Length: 151
Image (cartoon, rainbow, N blue to C red):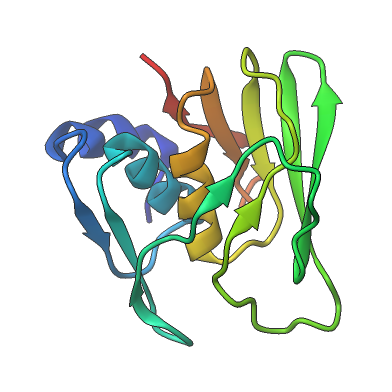
C-alpha cells in the first residue's frame, strides 16, 4: 500500500522535468504527485477501462466557462482553497476534454476534493503545480495528503 510518507523517496527516483508514463494501481494522489513533479514535461496515464494510454487533457485556468460533464467549484477555506469536483449525474463515463478551472488565489495551497478519474487528477496537478502546495483528501482515513509542495 502506498502511504504519503513514501512520496519523498519515490520522487527522488524520478527526474523532475522528464517525461513519464504512469501505469498500475495506486491512490490518485500518487499519480497527481508524479504528474506535478515532472511538469511541464509530457505525462501519460493508462486508463484500462476506457481510453488506454493518454496524455492529460488541456486545462484552462481562470475560466468562468463551465465544464460539460462535471463541475469544479472553488471554496475559500482560509489559507487553503478547496477545489470541489462534482460529476453531472447524466455522465457515467467522463470524456477527456479541455478542462476549465475557476479563478484560484495564486498564494494559497489547493486541496483537490472529489471522486475524479485519474486523468483529471493528473491534468489538474500539472496545471496547478505552481501553487504553494497541492493536496488531496485520502478517503481511507480522511486525512489531507500534501502530494506536491513547490520548492
